[in-house]
Image 1 (tube, one colour):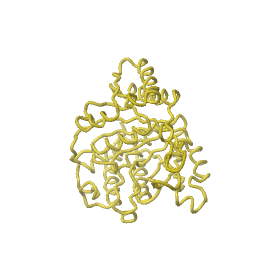
Image 2 (image 1 turned 60 degrees about the vertical axis):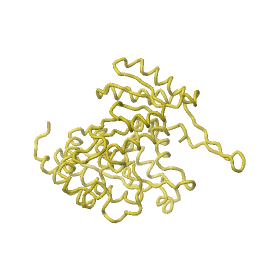
Image 3 (image 1 turned 90 degrees about the vertical axis):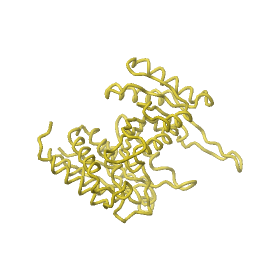
Image 4 (image 1 turned 180 degrees about the vertical axis):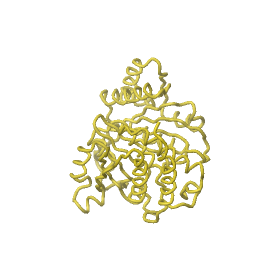
Amino acid sequence: MTHTITLIPGDGIGHEVCRAVLRMVESAGTATGTGFVWEEFQAGAEAHQRFGKYIPDELVESIERTRVALKGPVATPIGGGFSSINVALRKRFELFANFRPIHNLPGLPTRYPDVDLIIVRENTEGQYSGIEHEVVPGVVESLKIITEKASTRIARFAFEYARRHGRHKIHAIHKANIMKMSDGLFLRCARNVSREYPEIVYGEHIVDNTCMQLVMNPYQYDMLLLENLYGDIISDLCAAFVGGLGLVPGANLGHDSAIFEAVHGSAPDIAGKNIANPTALLQSAILMLRHLQEGAMADRLHAALESVYRAKQHLTRDVGGQASTSEFADAVIAELELTNTQPLC
């Protein structure tokens, strides 16, 4: 079988980590004869320079056809410039669920071992609706949009995932003590959905208290259900439990399409040096394989990744090693070649 996937390398280290991940994914496919066709497109400033658009029409057409994309980091200007490419793609393809699993990698010491959290973030509205204007000079208004449709949809996604995957507890995170109408609506929708899943424990925590509770004891949580901005902040906080944004995956999921991405920045200061860690994008690619119903391949790739971390011989500098990006990929591929000769379960 051959999968056709849209590839968006992104900026900075994006091209390096994408090339490494493609090598590892293609190696994982050799045991089953699974192939990949990558339709590559740029987005952001480089795309605008070449095509006059930050998101070229050809990229949109490719995702409409393939229904799945793998994306490296795309830089977003701060305080000006073009709007976030990430946000624009999520809105364009109705990728309403941002899904981030938070798990430790073996052999990598962290302050919190054995973390097992799932972050489910609403991905299309809230403060990221992008509705802003200057009322008068020196006064800017930014609107937070919360709808019953989107709030119910993301709550149902979270509870359905919990039921399918044996998760036992969901906390809805909010600031409804202050934003009584907007966050209140989000909570009412989550409560209504929760009643359909009596086997799953449902709770609610205020967002600022949640940050404190997470730092004190992340093990009290199983799944977190959040609005857009809260989810963006807390998912990064939780990434610190397992080593940082360079290690954790990200998925943007809709009914028809999905984009899997590295959630870290483009790191232009180390671009072109072959020292970037491709783990985050690799873990995102593993989520992508599961989405494509390639579970056995995803399992083998994940096992190879964990073997490399456990051995500690070919890790990149950000996690205490000396290996280059390509050397890390070579080590994962070597582990895959050991398992590719074993029969599939």
